Length: 224
Image (cartoon, rainbow, N blue to C red; front, top):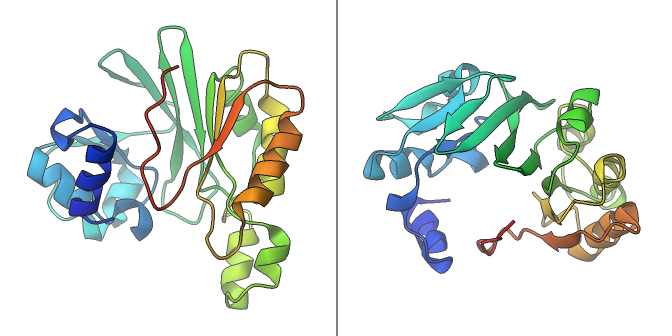
């Protein structure tokens, strides 16, 4: 998104760029870093990313404050404990994050082609889960994407399907899980209702509130 769109979406949830203490990147793909350079330059926001991500992120341009991070090394920021962990994705040094604050834990798992033992372990006991539910396999197979792109999405370095998302939720759900937010849904190869039903079935009797993050608008602020 452009800087203007990022600022507009922050305003829609009653926030401003000046309130941002930091920006954390997962990887260098253009749909994740497009507006980051202008954002951090205009508002002098520190940027956190792995060296691998930073070195190949040519679209970022000049960055006022860069803080390198590594998977497994926790960053302490204003009371938050932010732990990056390695993801299986077709990027230089991609990560996802677990964030802890006091007795609360948020687990994030997007842009990965496979669920490893490490992913399942690090997401255990999360109170909030942000989990990729990118595509419906059948919709992808019969959809308009070129065959090499389909193979890339379905590979171990691609994206999690609805079914893979469901398998992950089934493995890490617990009685204190409060919210699950489905992320990175494809407009072309998925349907919100399919993703929702698949995740709901995986959660079973778990009482966690389930919702979908949309590409077209900011997600409402959530108190945990």
